[in-house]
Image (cartoon, rainbow, N blue to C red):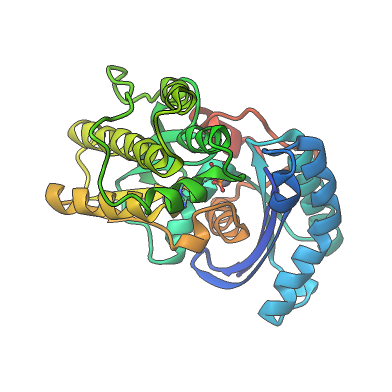
Length: 337
Ligand code: KG4
Ligand code: ZN
């Protein structure tokens, strides 16, 4: 079963062909990140225009790499939301047109659920599990009972973890996207500073990163710290917050498997720290391969396969959906068909 996955919720036009929700045949990604860098962040209108130009070359590029043609596609899976409306419209409209032209089903996938399925491309998901999705727009904790059954148990009340890293990097004059820059700068620090940036506590399984963003900016403006040291402190604060939340979640939802996903998971200090924490707790921590942590088409195709298996396909009137809470995932998936 060849599923073509299409992701266009932010600045990457990404496509991939995945077999049976498990096996990645080929992928193509055209990113407008270098163009967005001129603006220091993603400009929705610029991103939408770039998607419109890139989407057909990206789809055909992925098919060519897989040695397939358009008639070989059995199902189209597309990110339906949440994300930037213009970019989502390009992806969803294209997917529906391709599905109609080929006479095949089209599945609409929630972007955060898709991130989780980057893990399915390494090994079958083991349920029940806890999952932590950390991206540029979201920080969400999920109790994952089985395919299609996710319970949102914690989320950020303000900024996402990736946003704290991106804004921190911008404050220090580092390029967009800031997460990888912060990781590189932090690696230059041989001796940790004797101080820590403040982290928000006392919200149960919910997160807050806006105070950290402000504290980072204030430290930088004080002129008393260099970019490498501040990057280190910011990265440490984000990682400690995430691990503390996993630990609390595990006391409330005892499971044997924990899945990490989302762009921030590309940070290898985070994944090493999470794996070491898992070993101490006696749980297995799974992280996607680094190239599948940030937005990609394969995760959309993998997630889409399981929706298709349950008969959840987009009807002819369905458009993008944003905002779209994970809380409404089940209801909205069921009403697609
Ligand atoms: O999942 P993603 O590609 O897009 C969204 O759905 O938001 O995540 C993008 C986020 C950005 O905030 C970016 O700075 C962060 O992931 N990121 C990283 C790293 N690579 C990407 N954060 C920390 N370390 C990295 N190596
Ligand atoms: Zn994402």
